[in-house]
Image (cartoon, rainbow, N blue to C red; front, side, top):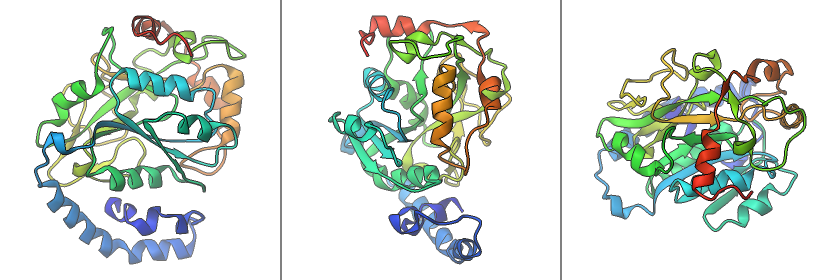
Length: 316
């Protein structure tokens, strides 16, 4: 199924309005399954090809799909640039604000207009197809997610990840997130998100079981889940301690070496705007209960403030 989902017929513009529960869609899905098996064999053969590092156009690319994230884009991009990301492939999904204009103002951003509903997995699979020969590694994250190495004033994401993905059998590094709450803000304060929201959940908060994954695109079969892609046979995805991850959530939350600071709620007002945008992977809107669930302010954590200060990122 993962290889089938990467087929151009599944990710191109002709299928923007596909209804995933319709009879027509189900028939198409089953009809293309044998082609997916053929594609899997092709991808497996291609994964054995040895690529020289210097032949890649980019060492580290960030991939994201976003809608109406204009107030937050500059901080997010500048942060990832500060930790060594070479380029961004951003799928602009029906934005009605200045998201596209801001994205195109950055020379290291490729903005792809990607309209339609339920496009998250399509975008990720499209990115695998586009980048498999030009990007050594891909970091797939949302616009409220910041990959962070705690206890390090400076770090390079590519160098950190390469220690794991340079192993022949490893296809990806799964990174747990820590949920940051509203810091009791009702309305958004001025300044950087990463400076303002300094209270987070405890590590054992059950929502922190989720991972996001940095991958070698040549060793990935495809995405059927936004958190954890399917590796090709013979490869594996591991956490920071080299333990195999085979599920989008893991009871063993590890975040001592690397984590994702997930600013899920921000202020209550911002969460309500986020709720109105809808979901990238499901029909409908978030429940207001999700704010209550995720608004965790149990641990004071200003490590991003310190990082921003030391890397001159305090100007938004």
